[in-house]
Image (cartoon, rainbow, N blue to C red; front, side, top):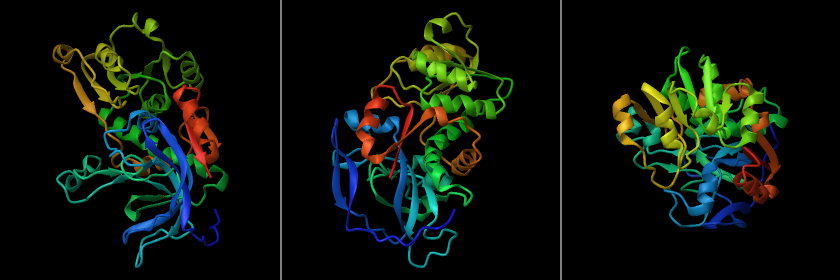
Length: 344
């Protein structure tokens, strides 16, 4: 992929910003100025995540009620690098961006648990993100897109971040080939989890989903056996690993019900309200409940999966111009689209 010509950065740029719950609009804001350890990036594409829908609806546990540029599934072009930088990146390179901004010094950072940093900030959740023309990010957060990637396919690398969160969850669950994996929810993340389970060597993957259109997509992909809740009531409790990829009000109950004795339950789906569960089921089945937050040390693996087309993602993505972002939000909220990706 040939490098682009030098970019002249304007003083102001367009950004799609959360002003208040259920109030999003385009604004013209100053173009960002990089700090000494940061690169300046021109956004190429950015995915729309369920977290963006949560932010739109009611804010988020990160949000401080100030206007915020959303978007954290980012692929971008390097415009400038820090003075004195001696690493492998060059201006004109395309990169994916880890949106987790960590301190590097706290108890968790020093033990490699970066996603649990005591002073964690997050692009698009607590500080301005990728639904804009330009962005700054620490150089350590950038992962170079391979040169062989064509310019026409660059938007696909916006999927590296959401896939990385699933890879991190799979590593925590660590399913074995002879174990059964059950997935609650077949949105984008549930569909990815089903495919990752197959890559992990799992032979039997089941998935619970109320939306028949999503079940049909899963059936076509072929990674999981999709069932609606009524069908699943007749199934035996058999899953060694159960993954909540829905974050729905009843997902926790389903996870505990489906897990077999000594099983593992991965809490991945996000729900802002507290969830009530039958605590006693954890005791009598001796379950292990595992929280999986964001991504941790999964970026290289995820980048390789996207670059090598190891996952069937075409049926799950919906490429749109950035000017159609309002329609993309509406379609994602109505479950008419799995994963809209906005591209300049």
